[in-house]
Figure 1 (cartoon, each protein chain N blue to C red):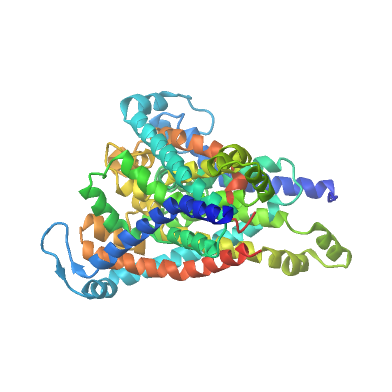
Figure 2 (figure 1 turned 30 degrees about the vertical axis):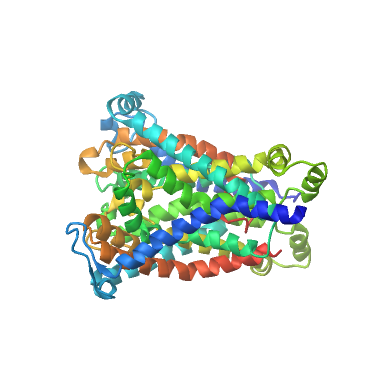
Length: 290
Length: 276
């Protein structure tokens, strides 16, 4: 039968992608889980011992973990608020009839395409440097004492840099959603005497709610893994001030060579990310049915 | 229906929008500007805006006295290689999901998406150790493999959303005319799918070019792409702002241009078709 044949062929065509991804997921994940139960340091090869949940215990009771956990929450939360709030405002602005809309749009989305390493270094040196940076010059010109951004307000600085990178993403997606808004409905509401405020609150915002959800979920996934921006600016410091969970695991694995501890941290990071992922997958899955 | 707006309002909105746009774009503009200054002018305060001795010396120095060309080549090989390999694996799969969906297709697709949610740091240790044992650390091959795998779900998903829009009747007709499966794909599907494939390719080159977790952690000197090369400027002894700016400008220019052309695809690709 042709259909049975087609179905078999279809399965064959999907097989490489599915099997490769399965291997990519299962093998490292299994290894991470296994390592997380071992006392295993790369500096002492051949000394691996099964220790059960000891690594988890160490990782979770390490004060650095709670600081990192808190930093991660503050960082992700603040960036979400800034980018979604700013994104809505920018999308509304770009949706207005203006001259040269295309050019403004290009300028607004540009930061998203700048590689994270470059944006972090440009902000760190050209803008935030306490002596020669542009911000320092602006502060002095206005009669203030310049602050050393990355050592005095390190977490805020990271939040500023990463928000700058992700604001375009939120704006672009919200603008796309905004443009599919029913104009006639808006005009009808306007004729019925609804002001701009209530039109935004009762028509625009509900229309955007799906896009906002998608932006929040996708950004959360990426923001939980912010790495390069921290590595090249503060290196997690001063102290642990900008250490996130991702960065903590990196330090444990590649700087302290503690495979067991890093694996336990990795498992915890996976669990945290999965809590977000479940919601994201649900909302995208719902979309598949339409 | 076009909205009618009073001219003063449009003027005011235009001014606000251009100001905000310029503000957001400013760091990029400033980087490009600094790349044409001398090192001394780059750190001078008050900063020089236009009235400095424009020079292309930094570009010359970065290109000749550092390993910039090698790292740029690494970036090209890794971004293109992983994208092409990804397409090769993903096109048949996306075709199958779009045109012969089974009962479990939706679950498989969502599962693929879920692998993308796996934080890189959760598998850093095993990947690092596997790479060490198989001699893949600091090789282009190793990075091509990793980037192919991390972007594969996005490639499959993007292609799937494009393929789904191709009318199935055309394929039926081709099948009726006796076209075999490979022929069906090559002569019927591919020509209609080329725009979608091109968009997918563009977005993935951008993602692979800018990827900065695996490229920083799995390379040292030989296979390091531009992300790692530029990250080396973060060390105190590498504090040459004008040269950093020149290297940065060269590293971001091609991607910025590609990105500007792929705005629409970006939305679709990064939201897995949830927002179009």
